[in-house]
Image (cartoon, rainbow, N blue to C red; front, side):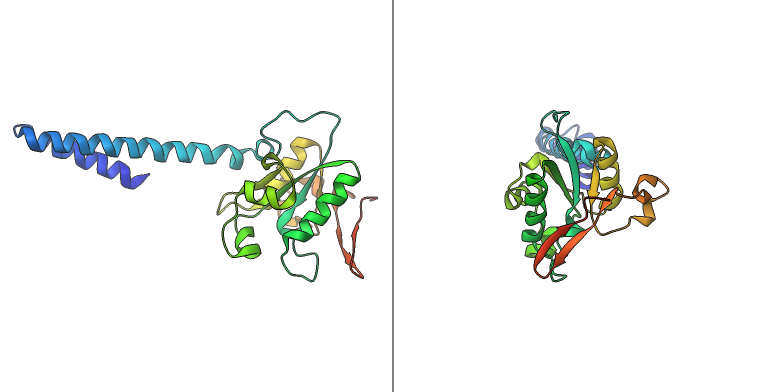
Length: 202
C-alpha cells in the first residue's frame, strides 16, 4: 500500500507544480487519479485479509451459520499431515477427516501458511486445500503468512466448543488457552502397522 500512496502524493505535487501548464497539469491529474485507485485497491485487499486472521472462528464455517446439533472438531492440518511416515501428505489429513465424518463429527481444518509449499512446492489457498480434502472452502483455513496457526486453532476451537486433533501439546499457548492442558481437549493420533488410530476416548 505504501508505493501507491507515494505515487499519489508525488502526483499531487506534480499538479501543484504544473498549475500554470495545462498539458502537464492534466497529465499529473490523471496520474493522481490512477494512483488513488491503486491506494483504494491495496486498502481493500488489506481489509479482506484481516477478519480471518483476527477471528479464526469466522474463518472456519464462515460462509454459513453452523447447525447447533453439529459436533465440531478442529484438525491441526500442519501437524496431522506428518502422521504417516513423518512425511507431509494431504492424503493423511484426508484420512483423518474421513474418519471423523464417519464418527459423526463436523471437521474444520486449519493449516500454516507454508503448508502448500511443504505438500506441493507452492502456496495453496483455502479452496485448493478444501478440494483436496473433499470439504467446502468454509471448512478449511490457511492462516495468513507470518501468523502462527496454533493460537488461532485454539481460539477457533474455543469459539466453536470443539476439541483439537493434533499431536502438538500447545504448551507455548497454555497461558492464553489453559483448556489445551485439560485431558481430552487435544486428540492424539497416528498410524500403527499402516492403520490410522485416533485417541477420541480421553
